[in-house]
Image (cartoon, rainbow, N blue to C red):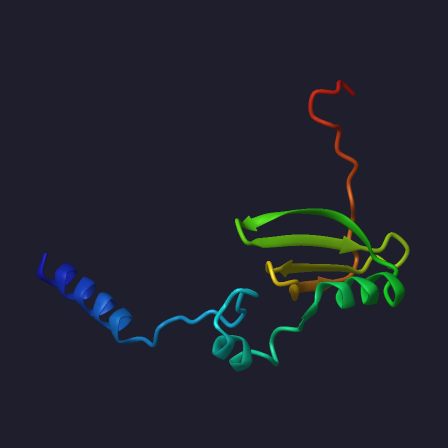
Length: 117
């Protein structure tokens, strides 16, 4: 019993001494000092500029979008011809930050709700 208590105390004590986990990807509504700290990790620009680049340079089209928070819009764009995709979030001021990019996107046609297939 004592050994089990000692082991538990050591594990939790070690966890308490560990440095805090900090997100490396700030949201677009994050404080400016957080955005500048991780600027090398996140690419942010006006939504209009990003959409122009995605459509003209990468041939991507909007797949879907939804609210991540009441003030943050998340969008997924992809290209059928190249398989590239981009996921980004936009804040109310129009600042968009890329969350993820990749290749080999596979889209699926889902039936509409309420419509029998």
